[in-house]
Length: 405
Image (cartoon, rainbow, N blue to C red; front, top):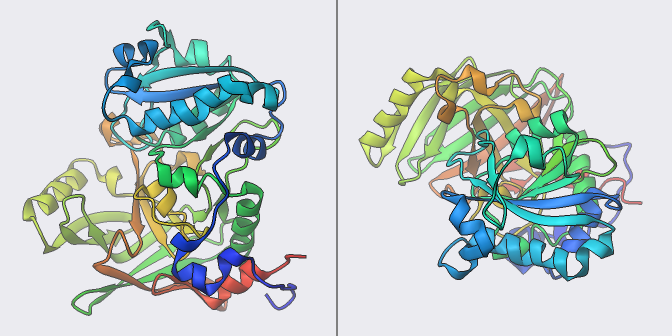
């Protein structure tokens, strides 16, 4: 860091905003600004929007879902993208198309999509035959993340795209209202600071004072970033909101805590990159038993496929897709990691429904029972603290201050 020049930090990196990101001021959401920044160039591109339902045909026909309760994500997709396309945005961006299609909900993070898809006339079509080959930019605004399957499909069919699962009003007003050139630059600053790390150690402090430590071997790999940009013509899929630096672990051991969906707390034991068992801290023993049974039945479900660090200053949205991008948080993920350049693919799982990519987010609002006391990066003889008590370290803040011209 000593060779880098530094200059005053932007307002959103001042301590008063870092401590209270809900006070950060964002410009109004603008679909044109977002899409032109993320997908430059857009001129000559044909685009469409994908949404999901349990029973797509009757709900997408004549947009019946707009008249029914619920479907917040799908209604946001219609209002902020489909309607915008047909109110002049296509012409503004030099694009064509703007159709909306619905596929069957996967009910799992990053599970492969079924091929059937329906248009607003209720006609059944095929993703492989009618959608992927015929659109240049595909926006998937869904209940569950589809980043992994669409990343695989974009390489096969040549399109670009963005996934925005869980889209809510907070995300629209913050995580999708930011300047993604700026987001990309900040992610790159932190990526360079952590690049080629040999290992990362995370100390988790429990309410009873115990400290659990997880060690993740990274084998000096090139750090990767989710930065939200798909500029040029190269097939790629952005996961929005973006803003993280991540690694695919090559090894892992130790322990880390887990808060299950029902509130049960457990300790997960990791050996050779795999979660091998869960032990109860408090809550429902049946939840722990069910997890252990799943690990025994299909051990691949416990393989650690990602270690990620947030790089943005954003308010809590209640959706992990944004909240895992917050500076000072970290997350682990189990399951498939082929979309991240890893070696865990769906065919390796015993059951299709197990081949998910599931993030485990550690953040004050999400896991108040656990404190990320310290995260340390090791690179050769160098050791740097990355996070202290859910706050970015001085090393990270110096990286963010570097090379701002």
